[in-house]
Amino acid sequence: MQKHFRAMQKDCRTMQDLNALMGRSCDWVRVYLENNINVREEDRHLCDGIGTKNYRTKEILP
Image (cartoon, rainbow, N blue to C red; front, side):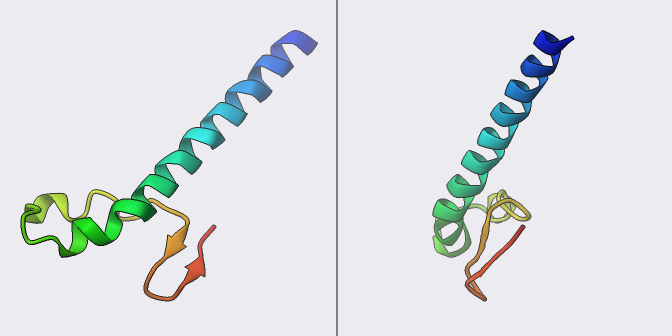
């Protein structure tokens, strides 16, 4: 049972790491997506709802 619990903990940490990576990636590329005239309209919102920082308010989101 303990071995199974440790494996679940590792999986949770991996998911948290992946979510953090997605958030940081979207934070980094968001301004480009929103402002580059060569980005298609449907691609401008790829990162909506993803990320840790709200650039408009400089507020860190949960």
